[in-house]
Every structure is written in structure tokens, then in C-alpha cells.
Image 1 (cartoon, rainbow, N blue to C red):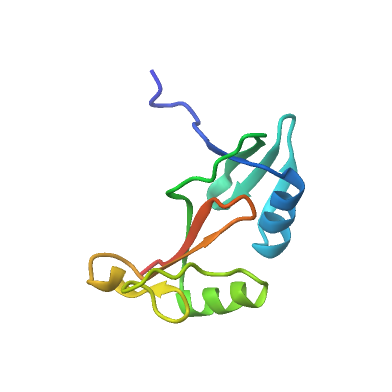
Image 2 (cartoon, rainbow, N blue to C red):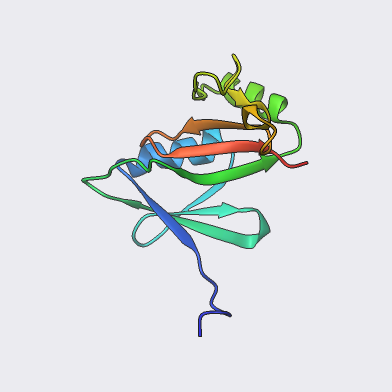
Length: 126
């Protein structure tokens, strides 16, 4: 029944204008105004719905992962735009990058938060 459905994801924020600026200007993604929030256009022709919620509680898990070719370059560029990367003791280096998830169990990854406190990441593609 749902196999051929064009499903999409969504998440809440507490301030649409801050979200639009962050996702559009800071991250450089295409953001459109929608009827009930924002539509974040991501690669592959997919869309993510961002909606306002007065009693928003930030997600405690990663809501969006952005694969990149060079994580060090991505972290440097985003840091230059004011993005602050999360620091997890015994897991991330001084840049906020967990290299091989500190035990060769996964890709190099760095987490950061949007203005609403939702967790995002950049991770090495290869």
C-alpha cells in the first residue's frame, strides 16, 4: 500500500524565520515558504517539511545527515559561518569530528545544532 508513496520527513522548530535564515543562508540550502511552514529542498529532488511548534522540544537524535566528500573542509566552512560543532568527551577531536566514531565503527562525523536545538550532522561519504 505505501510502497510507492512519495513519503517525506518533517520536524519542528520554534522560530520559522531563524530556521529559514539558518537553512537557507548558513547552510546554503534551498528553502521555500509553504502553506504551514517551510519546505527544505535537498539533493535528489526530495523535500523536508519544517513546521512551527509553540511548545517545540529539540530532537535528541540526529534529524538530518549531510554526506560530504571532505569532512574537514565542511567543518571548516560551516565553522566560518558561525556553526558550532558539538563536543563529546572521548569521542570528538578539537574540531568536533568523531573520527571513525572513535572506534572504527562508522564514518567520520560531526554534529551541530540548528537554532531550534535540533541535531544535524556532516559525515564523510567515502
